[in-house]
Each structure stands twice: as structure tokens, then as C-alpha cells.
Image (cartoon, rainbow, N blue to C red; front, side):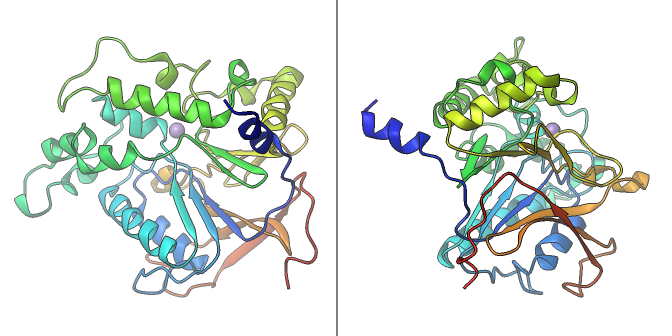
Length: 319
Ligand SMILES: [Mn+2]
């Protein structure tokens, strides 16, 4: 690798230049997805993109548990293009549930979610859904271009916890290795592989599965700080571990922030519809939105809670 590449990728970036919105695990909760996008005023009432010069990241686990993932995937595919045309970015990470379905594991899929993939054929949708998540399918082929780690300035976004074993990794390398494994190992529709690739499925090696931050102690904190420092970042934002009380979980001197507020468990009466909002002028906040269908009154019933992140705020960028 040329020296200049190394130098630029390890240069410290401690400020954000424009607003960043991060949305956690949706688990086929289309109503929550729409309410959040409208509540953040990223889309208009007709769900057309309307926000210039912002960055948006969704942390994966769009499918399973809930009633409707197909409409979320199709919405995200369209919004990516519209956001780009507006000078914004909209990135969606791969979650462990995306990988599970690509490898034929459907134990968390509901009948209703599967039926969404049938559309006009009127069948159960299971075969169409299976084909969509297999190589050649519209979901798989889109996922094959998505990252597992995505950095926006000082913020690194991933689905699960960053495993301690990967503390010396360069996120671009990790991302490339993961995608190569995902594309090479994914089986044809309806086939379950005998062995699952460790880089995708292991709690020690996969950024999709790890929950090491739960009980990692000081050793975990040191590893996470090492990874962030090597990659010129300050904060790791992830999902994957549901917080049923509906509040973001912050650990390790603010360097770790889990924003999975259990939106896939809404039918059980737990969790909350939330997003992480980081603005250069006002800092970081958890925004929580009321339930109900569609979020027709954008901006109504929003609760905001300040999150202290270890970033340097640029007071001039609000102008
Ligand atoms: Mn997950």
C-alpha cells in the first residue's frame, strides 16, 4: 500500500462537517421506518427525499421478526439514488439477519413478511423471498454492494460490536474481506451450507455478531479505543443488541454507542422508534418518535435527549 494511503486513512478526524443521522435495526417494521424518515424530515409526505447535504446511515437488520421488509428495501434502494442527487448520502449496512437469510436461515421470518415478496403472484411468498436473498436476487445483489463498516468523519458505524480480535484491523480492509467472503460463500436459493464462514458468523471475528461490549470490561474498552485510533475515528455506533427500555446504551468513555432500541419487538410493547442525530452546531441527540401509523404529522411528538460524544464541535459550521 502506498504511504499516502496509510497517512490519509489514519489522520484524526474529530469534527463532523454536516448533519449525520443514524437509524438502528428496523426488523421489518415499515411503519417505524416511515415515521422516523418523516420525523427527521429526510423525506416528504410522499416519501420523496428532501434533505440536501446530510449523511444518513441505517445499521442493517432490515428483515425478519416484523411484517414488512420488502417495502423497506425498495424504499432504501430508491432513497439512495435520490439522496445522492441532492448532495446527500444514504448508506445501509449489512446486518446479521441479512447474512442469515442469504445463507438460507429463515427461523426469524414471519408469514406476513414472506407474503410481501409474493406481490402479484398471490402465493405465500417464501420462494420469491428466498430467491430475493440468494445470489442473483434483487436484495442479495444490492447487499453485495453494501458495507459492514461505514465511516462518516469521526464516526464509525457497524452492525454488531467491534470484536477485540479485530482491534488492529483497517476498516477498509475488513470491509473488503467481508464482502468477498459474503459473495463467494453465499449458496444458491433453498440451499443451506454445511459450514458457515467465521468472518460472517463468528462472535470473535464478525462485526455482525459480536456482543463483546456487553461484558467486555476495561480490556474491551482498550481494544475499541485502539481500533478507533488506528482508523482516525472517535466513536463506534452500532445496533444488534436490543435495548428494550428504548434508550441508547453508551459505554467505554463514550466511544461505544448502541442505538438498537428494539423496534422489531414493538408488538410486544417494548422498545422505541429512535434515531441518532448529530449536528455540527448542536451536538448529538437521541430522537424518539411516537408510535402510530405513518408519522403523518412530521415533527410532532418528538422527544430529544442529549448524548455526550467525545468529539470536538466546530462552532463555526452552524453558519
Ligand atoms: Mn443483529
